[in-house]
Length: 283
Image (cartoon, rainbow, N blue to C red):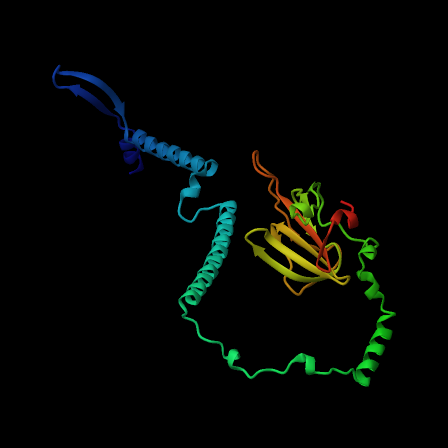
């Protein structure tokens, strides 16, 4: 049976192309079933190989359903966050305009506070400090006189603190309050992380549409450090951090030609006043 089947595969047939007008054979050649099977098999392998090379080494695969690279996905997420922020601002503006319209048209209710009884004048009230209050104030002042932490809140004392560098890089823009630039911009090195300059508690860890991923730390010396334009945040609000601990990561991708190099924006605040980080940290 196998010899008979093998002979059928090897049997040759003549394929001829005949011209009816001239009554002559234009083309003719011999083929076998085995040749046809091998030709179809290798043609399938060739087509499959070409399709694999196109999907592996060209961006065509990104157009297939469910296929998207990480960079495009991150860009879409950032755009969605910005759209949500803009939507919230637009809703607040609409409510504000609606309130203004109601006030202009007189469609507002009178607050019940306006009907409250008239309060006595403060000029007629005499406030006398009791002996108990005086004793408490004296005891508090005596106790705080020997509190070392109360003296660590002055700006001059901050220069004695051993503050860590927030990241490794070159300062590309310095502190300039005249230009409303209340910090320094540090060019990011690929693979570097963001470090806490001093021990403290995380008071902010969120994404903002203007400054990107931002994290802020409250320190003991009435000092607040802010790290803006991060790539990923590693700490949440309320967590305790140590000096030099990694709190966020930077963008590890290298900058492309014609694009702005990513940077970390770092700010230092003391009692509501912006400080020049170059004075307290050796970059």
